[in-house]
Image (cartoon, rainbow, N blue to C red; front, side, top):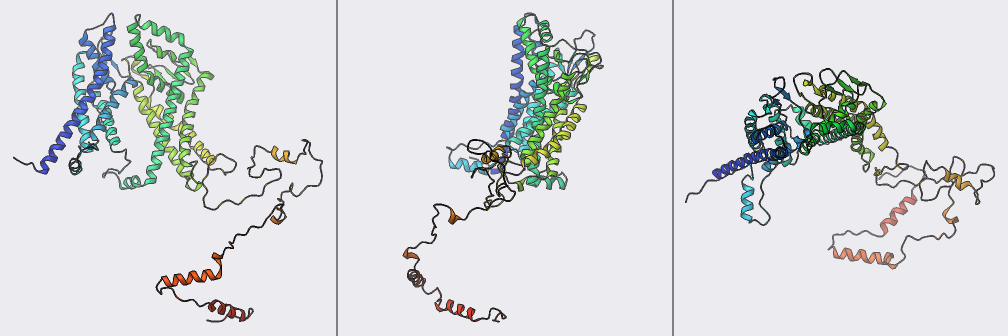
Length: 569
């Protein structure tokens, strides 16, 4: 019987782990493609007048799946005979493929540790050999397996009604898959922030190695995510309000696109998939640059300029009317203000925590830098999302349709930086204000207890006087029947100098308290007996201290002249 060497065993285990990671990437892509294909086939079966057979429906499903990865589609069957591009990506469809690729990479990068009931020999063997592929190996294997399915789907959809543009398969499809897989491997590693790559500059490596830098960067990312979420929520609110005002036009567009229930379900599903795009359009409208409705029309809070070319679709009923903007249109500017305040609030919470001492708070310079970094992240995220929220829908007037990312991103940066930095500084000062009249739960800087302050006239002992309740002092100076006392000479309590408290002996019921115990344990004889017992038990280690030593020192001190010079030893 031939025994394999340890190197052969380790090499074989790594090969199997890489093959397993490759299969996981293929399975992840197959699950996403299969689920979307089932949905398309259900709509095709329920349609009473299908345009093509099952082969065309399957090819259309493959094209839509590639569109969910950011690929540009081409529609060859047009009235003009010129193929029309379709570049608007339904952002709701992106969540499924990205999550599947992320989960496949995370599972492949995690080491398969034996269960608790396994034998000790098995666990020892697992500790000695690598439990799975390396992080780079898992990333490459999952990405390669996923892209194999992408290439097959692109080749299958070539003869369908919607086929993918080959130039967009490398960018952004491969980039989206690689980014999701990299995020999965990073999650499996515990989301570490560092160390920086060896090829990066030394200053960057030293900065990433510092714990303080990592904490500040994490706080900036969280603040940027909060601002981006508020921006998207505000945009969705704007779209919802606009659709509510133009509900009649939206209903007419919905009913006019399809006459049967299967077609209406398809339109409803498409509208749901484009709902995040509409929220980003609303955010771009509130930021100021707005969005393009063709090559010659732009909608901004100042008004709709030009003649828009609008397809008949329910979500497009939220587009404002032509003409200059009114007060309801200008109210959309509250969306970036709310996003900037969210960035400032999340930054101030980390700059001055409510349950930490003031000495641990960030300096104003650190607060400004973190807020600016959060504003930069919010602007970059807005530009990235708006870049895929719009896109061409044709070759003519609809070649430009949606928000312009290179205008929306800088607008988000300017809004969050201009409002977020002063708001963060003000919130920091507010959270660091003097305790005692505020809600802040400050931790004392030292272990010493604060000295009790002299209570003012009319203040209830044990209760802190509130600045918003000045009537307590007036109520105390009033009489028993609620009427004010007659004016007279100012008493010492009413002056600026607080009145001295009476001596404790003058207080009724005062009894002196003896802190020293009077039991025989502290007597002179008992102390000497305990000292002798300790000396005897120590075995002679304790030195003798004559009793007359202290008395002799006291006599020499009394005999010295108080006014003369000190004796020289």
